[in-house]
Length: 542
Image (tube, rainbow, N blue to C red; front, side, top):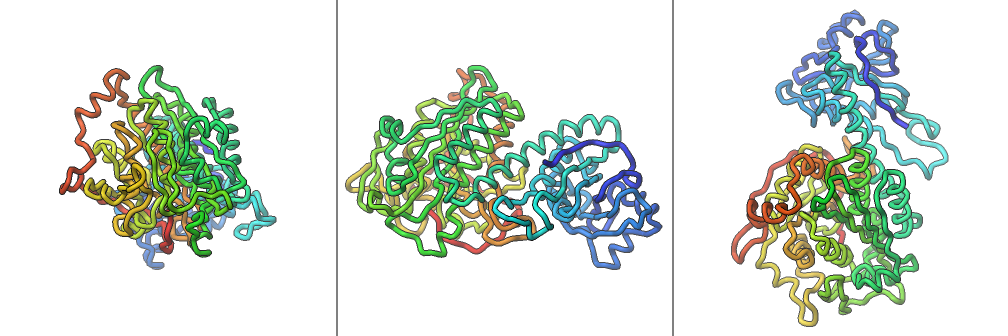
C-alpha cells in the first residue's frame, strides 16, 4: 500500500530511492534544483539544455546521484511555464514521476512547494497515486517491473516551511483519497466481466459501505420486479446473471436535501439481440464505468467526511442475447410508469438509467448527476480526451465543467436541443430508445430527461474517457476512473456552500437558467478545456 509523509529535510539530504525535482519551461530551476545541482557538482540546467529538455509539462529527465546526495537517483520533471504552473501541472508531473519511479520503493519530492501548498500537495498525492496504479491481479508475474508486489510504497512531500508542513499533511490525505477512489473504480472496470457480474458489483458496494460507514441496500431481481424497475429487468433478461440495483446513502449534513447520484452499470454489453461485432465487444467489460465512478465517489465522500447528504441508486445488468432477452419492438414499463419502445437492444444503458433516475427523483434531491459510457456519438463529437455533458440546469452544468477542469478530467457541453425530442417519439409507447444516427448523444440525453421530472439534472457521457484502449502519455491501457474525481470535487464544493433544505430547490431554480432549449434555440455556451491525453481509437458504444 502506498503511504505519504511530510519531511522538512533539504532535498540533497533526503534519503529516498528517487528524488523528484520540478523544472519550469525554459528550462528554469524549480525548488531544490540549484541545491542538488551544487551537491552533484553539475549545472543541471545546462545539462537539460544539452539534452534538449525544455521543461514542458510532464517531461522527465533522470540523473544518477553518484552518491553525492542521499537519494539514489534524481528525476527532473517539467511543469511548463513558471507563471502558469499550478495544481494541474503538479498533478500531471506527479503522474509522470510515479511512472518513472515504478521500479523503486520510496520517492521524495519538492513538487508540493510549487504554488498553494493545499492544492499542490493534494495534486501531488493524487498524481502519485494514479500514476503508480497497476492492475496485475490476473498475472503470475508482472511483465513491467518484475515480480508482483513491487513498486512504489512511500512518497514524501518535502515542505519549504513548518507552516507548509502542517498544511501538507491534510492536503496529502485529501489527494490520496481522491486517487485511491479513482484507482478502485479502475479495478472494478478492469475486472473481466466473467467475474464482475451485477452481483459482484453489488457485493463490492456492500463491502465498501460496511468499511466506510455508508447505508447500503441491494435490490434483488424479485424486489426489482415488485418495484417496477422494468428497464433494469429488461436489459438483464437475457443473462443468467440476475440484475441488481445498488442503493447507498451517505449522511453528512443532517436533514439537508441530498444530492442524487447514479451511473450506468452494464457489466458486459454484447448488444443483446442487436448484437455488436466482435471488435466492438472487446472492451465491453468497461460498460459499467459510470457505476464504478459513482461507487468510488461515495467511498471518497465517506472517507473525507464531506458535509453533505448523497443518495446513490446504481443500476446493474448484463446485456446478453439469451432466449429470454428483450426483442426489438418490445415495450418496457419503467419505475416512473412511463413506457419505452425498444428498437435497438444495444441502446440499453439509457433503459437501466431511466429506472434509477426515476427512483432518485422520488427522493426529491437538490440535484441529480449521472455518468455513463453511453454513445459512440459523443466520441465522434469530442474524441477520447473529453466527456460530454448536457442537462436541464445551466448552473449545475457549469459547476461540473469547472470541477472537471480542476480535476484534470475536462468536459464539454452539448445542447439538449428540444426540437430533437421528435426523434424519440414512439407510436406505441411514451418514448423510444433510439432515434436517427445523427445527434445520437443528444437523443440519448433527451430520453434520460424524460425520467427526472423537474429536478435539476446533468448527464455526463463518458464513452470516450472511461477506458483507454491503447496506452498514452498519461494513461496505461485500461480504465481511467473518469469521472469519479470530477464528481467528488463537485460534491465537495456543494458541501462548502450548501443551501438549507427548505430553500434549496426554490433558490437553485430561481438563480439558474434552464438548460433545456425551447424550439429553435440553442442551449448555453461551450466551455473550452485542455485535453488530458487519453488516446485511443474510436469505437461505437451504447
